[in-house]
Each structure stands twice: as structure tokens, then as C-alpha cells.
Figure 1 (spheres, rainbow, N blue to C red):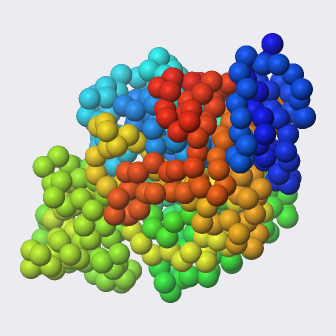
Figure 2: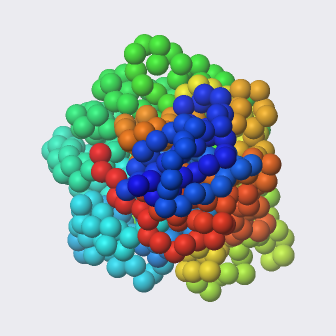
Length: 524
Ligand SMILES: [Zn+2]
């Protein structure tokens, strides 16, 4: 007997084909029939006026820790996201070295770490996944292994390049953790300490990823003046190893660089023409989100969080950092505080320039003081992208949607700060505001949110509405779907998405969370 029959809606099957008015039947967590179905079912769900699509696969997220505090995955599931890929940008929580090194690792990923109650009582990815599985989640979770925990476990937080023996050790550690079912590896080449990784180290690790046929996801070194240089650095690793490559959040930063994303896409095209597999993810916003430490020159980030914070107070270091900021044209009125340490909540949601003005100090001085106090826990939202660049990436055939956000719950511990609205609104924003632009039809917007991500990850049984696939589905009203999260009021769920089904069960029904932990860990 069919358990659930979705009737009367338009189906976008995820492949990019035109919408079709067909019914979809599910049973035991799977799609068992698609067509004009005249069958009886335990439950018939009338979805007239709605579009039924595969659940969105968010290929780029940072919910590694927040899912443990927020198993209901509130801000993600309500967007129609049914699978999250965690462990991006080199950040990760496993392997977790023992003792002081673990504290240093935790400090290095502080801007993702919103709940001090979470005990890091795992030592490797298999252990972490067990903890997550035990806690349960409403979304499915797939993971990458982050470069920072691998590098920090073997080399530490200094700037000296790894020795050949250390590279070998990192390769072993990566192999071990990939074996727990990771879909690939991620690096973040402007984050300390992996910003100090040599080309030998990167190629050595990419070689291991290639052995597993996983993806090599890269937050590149620079997205502003040196975008082309950064693309060439990444593609040289792709070309040397043949590793399947995912460029993280491809856009251009800084007004003087707007438009150069088209040249980056030409390099991506060239690599694909030469037989390599290179794709890019992107989220539909003109601001990014990172720790403020990302604006520091590399030398100033060396040594781990405490050493770095002490350096911010060092009178000889401060003028050098300020000249770096002047040279790179940092605009403090474009930088808004997202997350702080307890006790500094008065700063949340404010621009650095405004805070400086109210205190009658120079914004550069204020920024150094704040970094000295909060280090990597100081999260910012940085404006500086052009919408036309974002749209040209979306129009490119190799683009995939990735929110770069976190599963957050406005009513829980993860509801602190003033997060980037992408954590609440990425997919509805794409499906409302960005459709209708040339090259971005609703069918294509759904395709790059579903099958394109599944294909990249080699997930065979999700991402399309097809008989035999897992029943991960989202039903939304194309006229009503809309993101409500803004930079000023980010903690707002989208509207127009009445149903979200994960593994055949309702996670969202009639717009309400069923509070069921419908997700599972997906292993490669
Ligand atoms: Zn990221």
C-alpha cells in the first residue's frame, strides 16, 4: 500500500526538465511511483498550486556544531533543505587532537562554535558522526574532512611548511578519516594555519582525495585583486592530481574587481574542456560572512588564537596591520558585527565604522582592540560583491547552490548574534528573487539546488524525483515563496514552503515543524 500520495501539483524533477503535472507516491522512505496515478494510499496530500521538487542539497555548510545544539535544523529544514554537507572551507571538528591542541583547534573554528555546552568527546570523524547520529537531526548530513583539523593535528599552528614526514602523516590521517564515509576534503587557503600549507602539502592531500574519488572543495586564497592568481593556484592542484574540484562561493570581492568573475569562469571552463571536473558553488547575496581575523595579513594570524590575540596588543605589530588594511582598501562601513563573545552583545548588528564613531576612535584601532579581545570568535558580515557577478555564476552551467550557512534556531543557543541571512533564506531567495533572470529559470534554479549537487557528490539516490530514490521532497508555492531574513533582521524563517519530507517522513507539514528527527547520516 502506498503510504503518501502527492496529488495535483507541478513536479520539478530536479533534472532541469520542464515542470510536469504528475503525482508522486512514496512508501518506506522511497519514491515508488511517478505519473498520473489512480491508486489508493494511506494518505493523499493535495498539493494543488504547489511545486513539488527534490529536497535541496546544501553542498556548502558549516553546521558541524550547530546541529548538535539544534537537531531540528530549524533554519535549514524550513528552507526546504533536506541534506547538509558540513565540513567546508577547511573548518571541521574531526580529527580532534587530544589535550591543549584540541582547545587550539576549537579556538581556530570559534566563529562556528556557538554552544559552549557541546563536549568535543570524539577523536576522529567516525566518532563525531556517531555522536551526531545518536543526537539525531531533521536533515540528512554528509560531511567533508576539513584541512584545519588535519593540519593542526600534525603540524600545529605555526607558519613553517610541513616536512615530507609530516605530509605523509597528514595523508594517513586524511585516509583514516575519509574512510569514515566523508564525501571529500575541504581547505580554506586564507585561514590560519592552512594558509601556510605548501603546494607539496596541498598536492599530497589532494592525491588522497583522488584515491577516494571524493571532492576537493576549496575556499580560495583570495577573491579580490588576486582572484585569477587564486584560481590558478587551485587549478594547478586539480591539474597535478586530477582531483574532482569544487570552488567554494565563487564571486569577486571589492568594487574595483567587479566583473572579473567572468574571467574566473573562463579558467573553470578551460579546466573542464581539458578533461578535469571543476564546479563552483555560490549563494545569492552581496555580502559574505567570516571571522574578522580573515582580514589580517597571514603573519599576524600565526600561532593559534591566543598568540594572535596577544599580537593585536603589540605596539610594533599594530601599525603594520593598519598599513595592510589601508593597502587592501578595507572599508569599515561595509563590515557589520555578526557574532561576539558573551558580554559584548551591544556590538551585534552594528557597523565597525559606526561603533568607532560613537566611541570617537579610529575604526582601525577599534578593529585591533576587538580582535585582541575576541580573536576568531568575532564574526563579521562583509559587503563588497556585485549582484551581477552572483547572477553570472548562477547562469553558468557548472554552478551549484550552497548557502555557506549554518543550521540555526532563533529560540535556542544557536540564535545568538546577528547571523548572515543566508542561514535562513538562501534557497527561497534564489527561488523568488533570482528566477526570471536570463539563464535562471525555476527549473534550473531547482536543478542547481538538487541534482547538480547530488551529481557532484556522487549521491545516486537523492537529488531527483525518480522511482527508487529516497523520498526527500519539498513542496512550495511559487507565487508565495520568499525569504524574510535580512541583514538587519536575519532570524526569520521563509514563507511559502508548506511541506518538507525527509526519507519519506514529514519534517515540515503545513508550515509547522513536526519535531521529528527525519534525517540520517549519509556516507560515501
Ligand atoms: Zn564556507
